[in-house]
Image 1 (cartoon, rainbow, N blue to C red):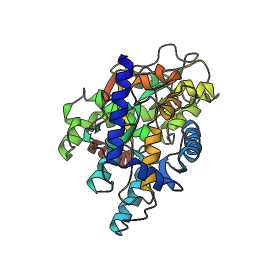
Image 2 (image 1 turned 90 degrees about the vertical axis):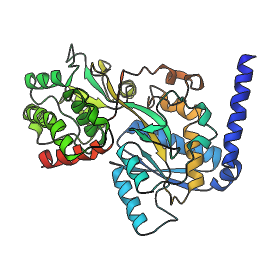
Image 3 (image 1 turned 90 degrees about the horizontal axis):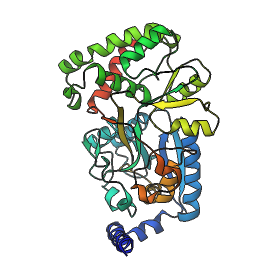
Image 4 (image 1 turned 30 degrees about the horizontal axis):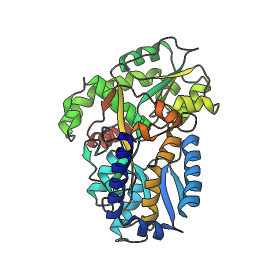
Length: 380
């Protein structure tokens, strides 16, 4: 009886939220639309999942989801800025984007987002509100983007190569010095590379609280100084002697499997399981986080202000928040991206994700500052 009333309350809440958007009218208009979804294309698991999502959307809603693969979503933000400057306020080329952090802040600041929608989606009541779904790198989301998954910066190693992996950045440097050319990280501004910089800086600065405020020239120079000293030492003994870097996290996995690197980098605590399942990594590989914790955030889906297929994008995002889609996305043998739904609404191995101790992301302004300085010093 208790479950019945809980389900009834959820259904009524669901219907009330849906009515605010006139979901039936949106669904009707979405039929036949093609949604151009600009998202990172560097993972076979993610690409395969989005192909499944496209087939499901076509079959259930008559909506086509076209995955436009990008290496860095900031390129898409630049395209939207150009359309804004040209006053192209309709029929935009981008209907939906996978973003968070600095890119969301930039879209919000330059008014590149459409109307708030997230909390009016029919599947919003399933979302786990204990997660920081209303804040993106300390920037209030205001319903302008919908949560899609949980990310944590983790490290992957082969237990046949390393008995006890380094659990601090200080230990990682020591390991690199003892094992020349076996450690590296993706080249910023690749997401995983910039995340590596932020996590290292948080440790080296003893989690200085100024990292959670907007960056200034003075604070940047003072607080980031230990990072550049650290990287100078790391690059001297790194893979390719710091003259070359992996392009993304996926390449570090390949280099680990090829035994060129001893440690790979991921922003998905479950990636090692799906990589083992598809044969990308050996069964002897394992995931861990630094002792201080894992840099963590929510990643989101948003709709630009000039989207050509806004209705289709709303339907697509709502579907991607459904228990069906989140259960498949969280399946440890498919993608393994941790769900943003309350656990009782997902099935299978999506229920089994165990997250590491969380470290909050710095203020988004630090991202651009770190990437610019890294490029100046090491961009070659």
